[in-house]
Image (cartoon, rainbow, N blue to C red; front, side):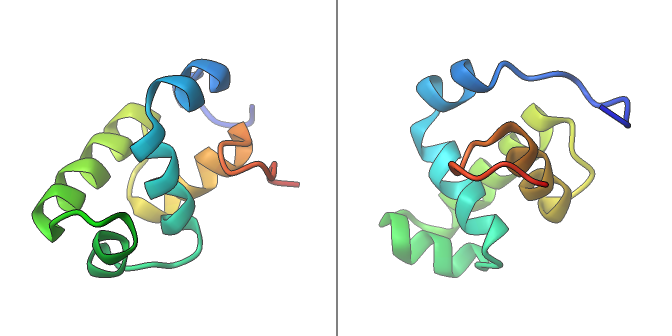
Length: 81
C-alpha cells in the first residue's frame, strides 16, 4: 500500500460488520448521512455514530477517505483500480 494506514483484514471486516459494510458502500456512492439513514432504516444520529466508527476503524481522514479505503479492500465487491 502506498500509504501508512492500518491494514485491515477484509474478510473479517465484511463478515464482522454488515451494517458498516453497507454504510461504507453508500458513502462511496456519495450518499449523505440522512440518505444512508433512509436506506438502512436507521436514525440519522445512529448513522452519524456508525460513520465516525468506520472512519476510525479504517484509519481514514474523513468519509471520502473511508470510502476509498473500503474500495481498496473490496468491501463493496469492487476493488479500486
